[in-house]
Length: 464
Image (cartoon, rainbow, N blue to C red):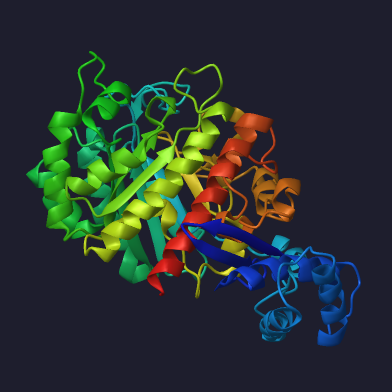
Protein backbone atom coordinates (compact mmCIF):
# COMPACT_ATOMS: atom_id res chain seq x y z
CA UNK A 1 0.00 0.00 0.00
CA UNK A 2 1.34 3.42 -1.00
CA UNK A 3 0.08 6.82 0.14
CA UNK A 4 1.07 9.90 -1.83
CA UNK A 5 0.38 13.55 -1.04
CA UNK A 6 1.73 17.05 -1.56
CA UNK A 7 2.38 19.28 1.42
CA UNK A 8 4.24 22.57 1.78
CA UNK A 9 5.88 22.11 -1.64
CA UNK A 10 7.02 18.53 -1.05
CA UNK A 11 5.98 15.45 -3.05
CA UNK A 12 5.79 12.81 -0.34
CA UNK A 13 5.39 9.07 -0.80
CA UNK A 14 4.73 6.80 2.17
CA UNK A 15 5.11 3.07 1.67
CA UNK A 16 2.68 1.97 4.38
CA UNK A 17 3.82 -1.59 5.03
CA UNK A 18 7.56 -0.86 5.19
CA UNK A 19 7.19 2.58 6.77
CA UNK A 20 9.58 4.05 4.19
CA UNK A 21 9.12 7.71 3.30
CA UNK A 22 10.36 9.21 0.04
CA UNK A 23 10.49 12.83 -1.11
CA UNK A 24 10.48 12.68 -4.89
CA UNK A 25 10.31 14.82 -8.01
CA UNK A 26 7.18 15.22 -10.11
CA UNK A 27 7.82 12.40 -12.57
CA UNK A 28 8.61 9.78 -9.91
CA UNK A 29 5.59 10.97 -7.93
CA UNK A 30 3.32 10.51 -10.97
CA UNK A 31 4.81 7.16 -12.00
CA UNK A 32 4.64 5.56 -8.56
CA UNK A 33 0.85 5.61 -8.54
CA UNK A 34 0.56 4.38 -12.13
CA UNK A 35 3.13 1.64 -11.58
CA UNK A 36 1.27 0.44 -8.50
CA UNK A 37 -1.94 0.14 -10.51
CA UNK A 38 -0.13 -1.75 -13.28
CA UNK A 39 1.35 -4.20 -10.77
CA UNK A 40 -2.01 -4.70 -9.11
CA UNK A 41 -3.51 -5.28 -12.57
CA UNK A 42 -1.17 -8.19 -13.20
CA UNK A 43 1.67 -6.55 -15.10
CA UNK A 44 4.95 -8.44 -14.47
CA UNK A 45 7.28 -6.62 -12.09
CA UNK A 46 10.12 -6.43 -14.59
CA UNK A 47 11.40 -3.23 -16.12
CA UNK A 48 10.69 -4.05 -19.77
CA UNK A 49 7.04 -4.98 -19.24
CA UNK A 50 6.37 -1.94 -17.08
CA UNK A 51 8.26 0.30 -19.49
CA UNK A 52 6.04 -0.82 -22.41
CA UNK A 53 2.92 -0.03 -20.41
CA UNK A 54 4.24 3.34 -19.21
CA UNK A 55 5.37 4.26 -22.72
CA UNK A 56 1.82 3.64 -23.92
CA UNK A 57 0.60 6.04 -21.22
CA UNK A 58 3.06 8.60 -22.54
CA UNK A 59 2.08 8.11 -26.17
CA UNK A 60 -1.57 8.68 -25.34
CA UNK A 61 -0.74 11.95 -23.66
CA UNK A 62 -1.45 10.75 -20.13
CA UNK A 63 2.17 11.37 -19.11
CA UNK A 64 3.91 14.62 -20.13
CA UNK A 65 7.36 13.05 -20.08
CA UNK A 66 9.78 11.67 -22.66
CA UNK A 67 10.55 7.98 -22.97
CA UNK A 68 14.02 8.55 -21.54
CA UNK A 69 12.63 10.43 -18.53
CA UNK A 70 10.15 7.63 -17.90
CA UNK A 71 12.87 4.99 -18.17
CA UNK A 72 15.09 6.78 -15.65
CA UNK A 73 12.24 7.34 -13.16
CA UNK A 74 11.07 3.74 -13.48
CA UNK A 75 14.60 2.57 -12.71
CA UNK A 76 14.52 4.52 -9.44
CA UNK A 77 11.12 3.09 -8.57
CA UNK A 78 12.19 -0.50 -9.20
CA UNK A 79 15.34 -0.01 -7.11
CA UNK A 80 13.16 1.07 -4.19
CA UNK A 81 10.87 -1.90 -4.75
CA UNK A 82 13.80 -4.31 -4.84
CA UNK A 83 15.09 -2.84 -1.57
CA UNK A 84 11.73 -3.45 0.10
CA UNK A 85 11.04 0.26 0.44
CA UNK A 86 8.17 0.53 -2.04
CA UNK A 87 5.14 -1.69 -2.69
CA UNK A 88 6.20 -3.76 0.31
CA UNK A 89 3.93 -6.66 1.32
CA UNK A 90 1.97 -6.60 4.56
CA UNK A 91 3.96 -8.81 6.93
CA UNK A 92 1.74 -8.08 9.94
CA UNK A 93 -1.63 -9.52 8.92
CA UNK A 94 -0.39 -13.11 9.18
CA UNK A 95 0.97 -12.29 12.62
CA UNK A 96 -2.43 -11.25 13.96
CA UNK A 97 -3.53 -14.80 14.84
CA UNK A 98 -0.65 -15.25 17.27
CA UNK A 99 -1.10 -11.69 18.44
CA UNK A 100 -4.66 -12.40 19.59
CA UNK A 101 -3.44 -15.39 21.61
CA UNK A 102 -0.72 -13.42 23.40
CA UNK A 103 -0.49 -13.61 27.15
CA UNK A 104 -1.25 -10.20 28.57
CA UNK A 105 0.22 -8.61 31.65
CA UNK A 106 -0.86 -5.37 33.28
CA UNK A 107 1.84 -2.74 32.94
CA UNK A 108 -0.01 0.50 33.72
CA UNK A 109 -2.79 1.85 35.92
CA UNK A 110 -4.73 5.08 35.78
CA UNK A 111 -5.49 5.73 39.44
CA UNK A 112 -8.61 7.85 39.87
CA UNK A 113 -7.27 9.32 43.05
CA UNK A 114 -10.09 11.88 43.18
CA UNK A 115 -13.57 11.76 41.71
CA UNK A 116 -13.93 15.43 42.47
CA UNK A 117 -12.70 18.64 40.90
CA UNK A 118 -12.34 22.32 41.73
CA UNK A 119 -13.09 23.43 38.17
CA UNK A 120 -16.18 23.04 36.00
CA UNK A 121 -14.72 22.43 32.55
CA UNK A 122 -17.55 22.45 30.03
CA UNK A 123 -16.24 19.56 27.92
CA UNK A 124 -15.24 17.29 30.83
CA UNK A 125 -16.22 13.69 30.07
CA UNK A 126 -15.89 13.01 33.80
CA UNK A 127 -18.76 15.38 34.70
CA UNK A 128 -16.66 17.57 37.03
CA UNK A 129 -14.94 14.44 38.34
CA UNK A 130 -18.03 12.42 39.24
CA UNK A 131 -17.84 9.96 36.31
CA UNK A 132 -21.61 9.41 36.20
CA UNK A 133 -21.55 8.47 39.87
CA UNK A 134 -20.66 10.07 43.19
CA UNK A 135 -17.86 12.30 44.36
CA UNK A 136 -15.19 10.35 46.20
CA UNK A 137 -11.51 10.35 47.13
CA UNK A 138 -9.42 7.19 46.94
CA UNK A 139 -8.31 5.92 50.34
CA UNK A 140 -4.70 4.98 51.03
CA UNK A 141 -5.81 1.39 51.62
CA UNK A 142 -7.50 1.13 48.20
CA UNK A 143 -4.52 2.75 46.51
CA UNK A 144 -2.14 0.27 48.11
CA UNK A 145 -4.29 -2.63 46.93
CA UNK A 146 -4.19 -1.16 43.42
CA UNK A 147 -0.38 -1.07 43.43
CA UNK A 148 -0.28 -4.59 44.86
CA UNK A 149 -2.61 -5.71 42.05
CA UNK A 150 -0.32 -4.11 39.47
CA UNK A 151 2.79 -5.80 40.83
CA UNK A 152 1.04 -9.18 41.09
CA UNK A 153 -0.30 -9.01 37.53
CA UNK A 154 2.73 -7.55 35.77
CA UNK A 155 4.49 -10.84 35.11
CA UNK A 156 8.16 -10.42 34.29
CA UNK A 157 7.77 -6.79 33.30
CA UNK A 158 10.07 -4.56 35.34
CA UNK A 159 8.93 -1.04 34.42
CA UNK A 160 5.41 -0.17 35.61
CA UNK A 161 3.45 3.04 35.09
CA UNK A 162 0.95 4.74 37.38
CA UNK A 163 -0.88 7.95 36.47
CA UNK A 164 -2.53 9.91 39.26
CA UNK A 165 -5.72 11.13 37.61
CA UNK A 166 -9.05 12.73 38.45
CA UNK A 167 -11.09 14.85 38.68
CA UNK A 168 -8.25 16.75 40.22
CA UNK A 169 -5.67 14.54 41.97
CA UNK A 170 -4.24 17.39 44.04
CA UNK A 171 -7.51 17.37 45.99
CA UNK A 172 -6.21 14.10 47.49
CA UNK A 173 -2.55 15.10 47.64
CA UNK A 174 -1.60 13.41 50.92
CA UNK A 175 -2.71 10.04 49.57
CA UNK A 176 -0.77 10.65 46.35
CA UNK A 177 2.42 11.18 48.36
CA UNK A 178 1.83 8.14 50.55
CA UNK A 179 1.13 5.94 47.54
CA UNK A 180 4.35 7.03 45.85
CA UNK A 181 6.23 6.09 49.02
CA UNK A 182 4.44 2.74 49.11
CA UNK A 183 5.24 2.11 45.47
CA UNK A 184 8.92 2.81 46.09
CA UNK A 185 8.86 0.29 48.95
CA UNK A 186 7.61 -2.38 46.53
CA UNK A 187 10.33 -1.84 43.93
CA UNK A 188 13.39 -3.64 45.32
CA UNK A 189 11.72 -6.72 46.85
CA UNK A 190 9.65 -7.28 43.69
CA UNK A 191 12.30 -6.22 41.16
CA UNK A 192 10.04 -3.53 39.77
CA UNK A 193 10.45 0.13 38.90
CA UNK A 194 7.52 2.56 39.08
CA UNK A 195 7.15 5.48 36.72
CA UNK A 196 4.66 7.88 38.28
CA UNK A 197 2.87 10.67 36.42
CA UNK A 198 0.41 13.34 37.48
CA UNK A 199 -2.33 15.15 35.56
CA UNK A 200 -3.42 18.45 37.14
CA UNK A 201 -5.40 21.60 36.39
CA UNK A 202 -2.90 23.57 38.46
CA UNK A 203 -5.26 25.35 40.84
CA UNK A 204 -3.70 23.71 43.92
CA UNK A 205 -0.16 23.63 42.57
CA UNK A 206 2.34 25.14 45.02
CA UNK A 207 6.05 24.94 45.87
CA UNK A 208 5.65 21.86 48.06
CA UNK A 209 3.82 19.99 45.29
CA UNK A 210 6.41 21.08 42.71
CA UNK A 211 9.31 19.90 44.85
CA UNK A 212 7.73 16.48 45.34
CA UNK A 213 6.69 16.17 41.69
CA UNK A 214 10.18 17.03 40.49
CA UNK A 215 11.66 14.40 42.76
CA UNK A 216 9.20 11.57 42.16
CA UNK A 217 7.17 12.08 38.98
CA UNK A 218 8.55 10.98 35.61
CA UNK A 219 6.03 13.14 33.77
CA UNK A 220 3.48 15.83 34.54
CA UNK A 221 0.48 16.82 32.41
CA UNK A 222 -0.63 20.43 32.90
CA UNK A 223 -4.11 21.25 31.63
CA UNK A 224 -4.40 24.56 29.77
CA UNK A 225 -6.26 25.27 26.54
CA UNK A 226 -4.22 28.18 25.18
CA UNK A 227 -5.16 31.85 24.95
CA UNK A 228 -6.82 33.36 28.02
CA UNK A 229 -10.21 33.87 26.37
CA UNK A 230 -10.18 30.31 24.99
CA UNK A 231 -9.10 28.74 28.27
CA UNK A 232 -11.46 30.69 30.52
CA UNK A 233 -14.44 29.98 28.30
CA UNK A 234 -14.07 26.21 28.66
CA UNK A 235 -12.19 25.80 31.97
CA UNK A 236 -13.84 28.08 34.56
CA UNK A 237 -14.32 27.65 38.27
CA UNK A 238 -17.77 26.56 39.39
CA UNK A 239 -18.60 30.19 40.08
CA UNK A 240 -17.86 31.04 36.47
CA UNK A 241 -14.58 32.91 36.99
CA UNK A 242 -11.68 31.93 34.78
CA UNK A 243 -8.63 29.94 35.87
CA UNK A 244 -6.02 31.13 33.32
CA UNK A 245 -4.40 33.86 35.38
CA UNK A 246 -3.85 31.70 38.46
CA UNK A 247 -2.39 28.67 36.68
CA UNK A 248 -0.08 30.16 34.04
CA UNK A 249 2.62 31.42 36.45
CA UNK A 250 2.57 28.06 38.26
CA UNK A 251 2.84 26.06 35.05
CA UNK A 252 5.69 28.22 33.76
CA UNK A 253 7.57 27.79 37.03
CA UNK A 254 7.08 24.02 37.02
CA UNK A 255 8.08 23.62 33.37
CA UNK A 256 11.24 25.66 33.91
CA UNK A 257 12.06 23.74 37.10
CA UNK A 258 12.01 20.54 35.01
CA UNK A 259 14.30 22.11 32.38
CA UNK A 260 11.45 22.13 29.87
CA UNK A 261 11.41 18.31 29.76
CA UNK A 262 9.32 15.48 31.19
CA UNK A 263 6.06 17.39 31.14
CA UNK A 264 3.59 18.74 28.66
CA UNK A 265 0.88 21.35 28.67
CA UNK A 266 -2.25 19.73 27.36
CA UNK A 267 -5.17 21.63 25.87
CA UNK A 268 -8.40 20.88 24.07
CA UNK A 269 -9.71 22.80 21.08
CA UNK A 270 -13.40 23.03 20.25
CA UNK A 271 -15.77 24.50 17.69
CA UNK A 272 -15.09 27.86 19.34
CA UNK A 273 -11.36 27.94 18.54
CA UNK A 274 -10.94 26.33 15.16
CA UNK A 275 -7.86 28.54 14.83
CA UNK A 276 -6.17 26.35 17.44
CA UNK A 277 -2.74 26.94 15.86
CA UNK A 278 -2.93 30.32 17.57
CA UNK A 279 -3.29 28.57 20.92
CA UNK A 280 -0.26 26.39 20.25
CA UNK A 281 1.71 29.50 19.27
CA UNK A 282 0.47 31.29 22.40
CA UNK A 283 1.66 28.48 24.65
CA UNK A 284 4.99 28.40 22.83
CA UNK A 285 5.36 32.17 23.24
CA UNK A 286 4.75 31.75 26.97
CA UNK A 287 7.86 29.58 26.99
CA UNK A 288 6.42 26.07 26.96
CA UNK A 289 8.33 23.62 24.76
CA UNK A 290 6.25 20.46 25.28
CA UNK A 291 2.73 21.06 23.98
CA UNK A 292 -0.35 19.01 23.18
CA UNK A 293 -3.55 20.65 21.95
CA UNK A 294 -6.10 18.03 20.97
CA UNK A 295 -9.58 17.98 19.41
CA UNK A 296 -12.57 17.79 21.71
CA UNK A 297 -14.64 14.62 21.47
CA UNK A 298 -18.29 15.49 21.99
CA UNK A 299 -21.73 14.63 20.72
CA UNK A 300 -23.64 16.77 18.21
CA UNK A 301 -25.88 18.05 20.98
CA UNK A 302 -22.98 20.00 22.51
CA UNK A 303 -22.54 23.53 21.16
CA UNK A 304 -18.73 23.25 21.39
CA UNK A 305 -18.55 19.95 19.45
CA UNK A 306 -16.55 19.76 16.23
CA UNK A 307 -18.69 19.33 13.13
CA UNK A 308 -18.24 18.05 9.63
CA UNK A 309 -18.50 21.60 8.29
CA UNK A 310 -15.49 22.49 10.46
CA UNK A 311 -13.29 19.93 8.77
CA UNK A 312 -11.91 22.07 5.93
CA UNK A 313 -10.80 24.71 8.43
CA UNK A 314 -9.32 22.14 10.81
CA UNK A 315 -7.25 20.40 8.14
CA UNK A 316 -5.93 23.72 6.89
CA UNK A 317 -5.11 24.72 10.47
CA UNK A 318 -2.95 21.63 10.95
CA UNK A 319 -1.08 22.51 7.75
CA UNK A 320 -0.60 26.06 9.03
CA UNK A 321 0.58 24.79 12.40
CA UNK A 322 3.08 22.42 10.79
CA UNK A 323 4.67 25.27 8.84
CA UNK A 324 4.71 27.46 11.95
CA UNK A 325 6.46 24.82 14.04
CA UNK A 326 8.92 24.07 11.24
CA UNK A 327 9.86 27.74 11.05
CA UNK A 328 10.31 27.89 14.84
CA UNK A 329 12.54 24.82 14.71
CA UNK A 330 14.74 26.31 11.99
CA UNK A 331 14.93 29.58 13.95
CA UNK A 332 16.24 27.78 17.02
CA UNK A 333 12.95 27.97 18.95
CA UNK A 334 11.82 24.33 18.80
CA UNK A 335 8.50 23.08 20.15
CA UNK A 336 7.60 19.43 20.57
CA UNK A 337 3.98 19.21 19.50
CA UNK A 338 2.61 15.90 20.73
CA UNK A 339 0.56 15.02 17.63
CA UNK A 340 3.45 15.77 15.27
CA UNK A 341 5.90 13.53 17.10
CA UNK A 342 6.60 10.57 14.85
CA UNK A 343 9.44 8.05 14.65
CA UNK A 344 10.22 7.03 11.09
CA UNK A 345 13.23 4.88 11.96
CA UNK A 346 12.23 2.65 14.87
CA UNK A 347 8.81 3.52 16.18
CA UNK A 348 6.68 1.41 18.48
CA UNK A 349 6.84 -2.37 18.60
CA UNK A 350 4.55 -4.48 16.44
CA UNK A 351 2.03 -5.04 19.25
CA UNK A 352 1.77 -1.29 19.82
CA UNK A 353 1.37 -0.60 16.11
CA UNK A 354 -1.48 -3.09 15.87
CA UNK A 355 -3.42 -2.46 19.06
CA UNK A 356 -2.53 0.96 20.41
CA UNK A 357 -2.67 1.97 24.07
CA UNK A 358 -3.40 -1.49 25.48
CA UNK A 359 -6.62 -0.43 27.20
CA UNK A 360 -8.52 -3.32 28.76
CA UNK A 361 -5.45 -5.55 28.70
CA UNK A 362 -2.15 -3.91 29.65
CA UNK A 363 -3.66 -0.67 30.88
CA UNK A 364 -6.57 -0.36 33.33
CA UNK A 365 -8.32 2.40 35.26
CA UNK A 366 -9.03 2.14 38.98
CA UNK A 367 -11.91 4.03 40.63
CA UNK A 368 -11.65 5.51 44.16
CA UNK A 369 -13.33 2.38 45.55
CA UNK A 370 -11.11 -0.03 43.63
CA UNK A 371 -13.19 -1.05 40.61
CA UNK A 372 -11.34 -1.90 37.39
CA UNK A 373 -12.30 -0.54 33.96
CA UNK A 374 -10.58 -0.76 30.55
CA UNK A 375 -9.55 2.91 30.73
CA UNK A 376 -10.57 6.22 32.28
CA UNK A 377 -13.11 6.94 29.55
CA UNK A 378 -15.09 3.78 30.32
CA UNK A 379 -15.30 4.48 34.05
CA UNK A 380 -18.93 4.65 35.17
CA UNK A 381 -20.22 2.43 32.37
CA UNK A 382 -21.19 -0.73 34.25
CA UNK A 383 -21.09 -2.78 31.05
CA UNK A 384 -17.31 -2.42 31.20
CA UNK A 385 -16.76 -3.09 34.91
CA UNK A 386 -14.03 -5.74 34.78
CA UNK A 387 -13.42 -6.50 38.44
CA UNK A 388 -11.70 -4.88 41.41
CA UNK A 389 -8.26 -4.56 42.94
CA UNK A 390 -8.96 -7.19 45.62
CA UNK A 391 -10.27 -9.99 43.39
CA UNK A 392 -8.61 -8.96 40.13
CA UNK A 393 -10.13 -9.14 36.65
CA UNK A 394 -13.35 -11.16 36.84
CA UNK A 395 -14.79 -10.26 33.44
CA UNK A 396 -12.18 -11.94 31.29
CA UNK A 397 -14.60 -11.70 28.36
CA UNK A 398 -14.14 -7.91 28.37
CA UNK A 399 -10.38 -8.32 28.51
CA UNK A 400 -10.50 -10.79 25.61
CA UNK A 401 -12.65 -8.42 23.56
CA UNK A 402 -10.05 -5.69 23.97
CA UNK A 403 -7.25 -8.16 23.29
CA UNK A 404 -8.77 -8.79 19.86
CA UNK A 405 -9.19 -5.08 19.13
CA UNK A 406 -6.63 -4.21 16.47
CA UNK A 407 -6.26 -2.55 13.08
CA UNK A 408 -7.22 -5.75 11.24
CA UNK A 409 -10.41 -6.17 13.26
CA UNK A 410 -11.63 -2.76 12.06
CA UNK A 411 -12.94 -2.47 8.51
CA UNK A 412 -12.24 1.25 8.44
CA UNK A 413 -8.58 0.67 9.31
CA UNK A 414 -7.62 -2.05 6.83
CA UNK A 415 -7.01 0.28 3.88
CA UNK A 416 -6.01 3.37 5.86
CA UNK A 417 -2.45 4.60 5.39
CA UNK A 418 -2.26 5.85 8.98
CA UNK A 419 -3.20 2.57 10.66
CA UNK A 420 0.31 1.78 11.93
CA UNK A 421 0.64 5.28 13.42
CA UNK A 422 -2.70 5.60 15.21
CA UNK A 423 -3.00 1.84 15.86
CA UNK A 424 -6.74 1.88 15.21
CA UNK A 425 -7.60 4.94 17.26
CA UNK A 426 -9.37 5.22 20.59
CA UNK A 427 -11.62 2.31 21.58
CA UNK A 428 -13.69 4.55 23.85
CA UNK A 429 -14.39 7.05 21.07
CA UNK A 430 -15.39 4.19 18.78
CA UNK A 431 -17.76 2.80 21.39
CA UNK A 432 -19.27 6.17 22.28
CA UNK A 433 -20.07 7.00 18.67
CA UNK A 434 -20.89 3.55 17.29
CA UNK A 435 -21.49 1.24 20.27
CA UNK A 436 -18.60 -0.96 19.17
CA UNK A 437 -14.92 -0.81 20.12
CA UNK A 438 -14.00 -2.24 16.71
CA UNK A 439 -15.39 0.67 14.75
CA UNK A 440 -13.71 4.07 14.43
CA UNK A 441 -14.53 7.68 15.26
CA UNK A 442 -14.68 9.09 11.72
CA UNK A 443 -14.01 12.75 12.41
CA UNK A 444 -11.08 11.81 14.62
CA UNK A 445 -9.71 9.54 11.90
CA UNK A 446 -9.70 12.33 9.35
CA UNK A 447 -7.82 14.62 11.72
CA UNK A 448 -5.37 11.83 12.58
CA UNK A 449 -4.55 11.26 8.92
CA UNK A 450 -3.80 14.95 8.48
CA UNK A 451 -1.57 14.97 11.57
CA UNK A 452 0.44 12.04 10.23
CA UNK A 453 0.89 13.81 6.90
CA UNK A 454 2.05 16.99 8.63
CA UNK A 455 4.43 15.10 10.90
CA UNK A 456 6.06 13.34 7.94
CA UNK A 457 6.35 16.64 6.06
CA UNK A 458 8.20 18.22 8.98
CA UNK A 459 10.60 15.27 9.10
CA UNK A 460 11.19 15.56 5.35
CA UNK A 461 11.85 19.28 5.56
CA UNK A 462 14.30 18.93 8.43
CA UNK A 463 16.17 16.18 6.59
CA UNK A 464 17.11 18.49 3.72
